[in-house]
Length: 189
Image 1 (cartoon, rainbow, N blue to C red):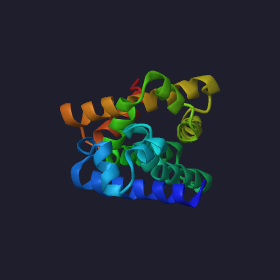
Image 2 (image 1 turned 135 degrees about the horizontal axis):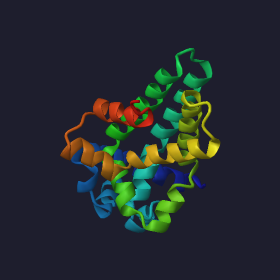
Image 3 (image 1 turned 60 degrees about the vertical axis):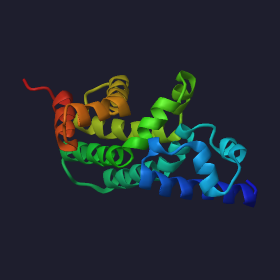
Image 4 (image 1 turned 180 degrees about the vertical axis):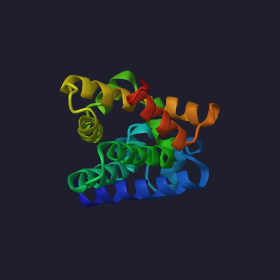
């Protein structure tokens, strides 16, 4: 990537971060963002074809840090498997809360094809692999196919629309959501 293109991307991300923090993701338009970043609208759309793509770029670092930190945790922990599962899920819920507006835009601004492509990204695969790894520790007798399905279903439960509904309409805290997910994963006898 050329240095001017790299500089434009950095300007866009820095400006978007500031504007989104001030006014909320949904309240900032792409044209306004381009003006605030002192770039052309065409330059903005060449870098990020929609606000969902821009939001994805903004949360990529957080997601990569989460996966790296939790992988290091799983590599070194002596905690029991259930504590490991709680730790992994709590870390992900923290990211969902921190970037809730960005996740909502990502999921609402993407077409079905783009959403399918999003599920093919390294960020998604790394997060699912992390979930599978910890689920295997809590359920060592489960088949790889079942663990894959279970990880995908956990991710689906935490998609923005469902997550936002549970938080804002059902008034569940992140802790309550975590407790209910754990209950689903380990039904009472």
